[in-house]
Length: 102
Image (cartoon, rainbow, N blue to C red; front, side):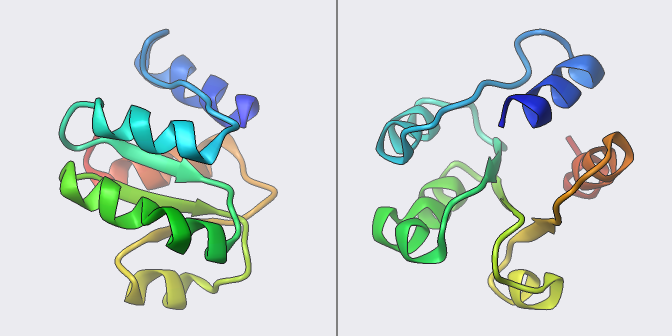
């Protein structure tokens, strides 16, 4: 998670990304985040569904980016998410950011 956050900080500045290893705490942080937040989530689908992480992000007018995982890019897109496959590069993270318009 920290490597992804560091890529984002390099592009957008020191306050542009934070990491959270506790999914429940992440939900609280998302609720307090500015509108249009982009959340990179490396969690299993059942946990994502249980926490309604996607709905929390959507309520903030944001975008969920699933990191790795068991979905294909098309399956993620059907759910309204983006997919960042692993291993990822700086350019791949930039592509996701540009796709979101951040």
